[in-house]
Image (cartoon, rainbow, N blue to C red; front, side, top):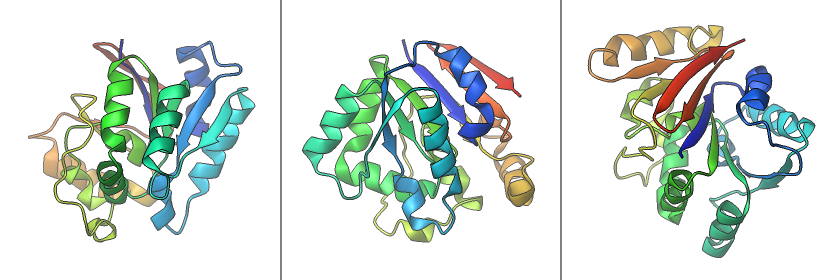
Length: 204
């Protein structure tokens, strides 16, 4: 059964995650910070990692832009969970495709491995990420040929909705695409919980 936990800010909904997946202690998370390496501010990466460790999880970092194919396959397949952080969604997609990590993640999630996506990591689970152009710069992914993404869910997450820094940008995305796409806006205090075909939103 497919299981995803999609958020804007993991530390703000960590308690919801504990209830969503209770068997956590001693489990290992493949932590992918790739989206953040082209951004100036990556504070959510540090706070997300600390929140995971506080739960008793072992964080195994995987920087896919520099890792070998063998390392990527080994970590994603052998570790218990996959966590993809926030940052630039287009750069993230470029590197996922370039390294073949996208296919490895899709296979693992479709086989039942828990996927945690924070901000860009949540956006990437939709079938196409063109809609997020109003939030992220496409210039950071010069080798990206198309916007086709992981296609793990049938909706399009709009992270940081109502957050002061992103208020205008997220509203513009909503105004532009709400008539054509199944948008799912979430604030920093919301989480989208996917279990098989069931999708629900929980808030703090």
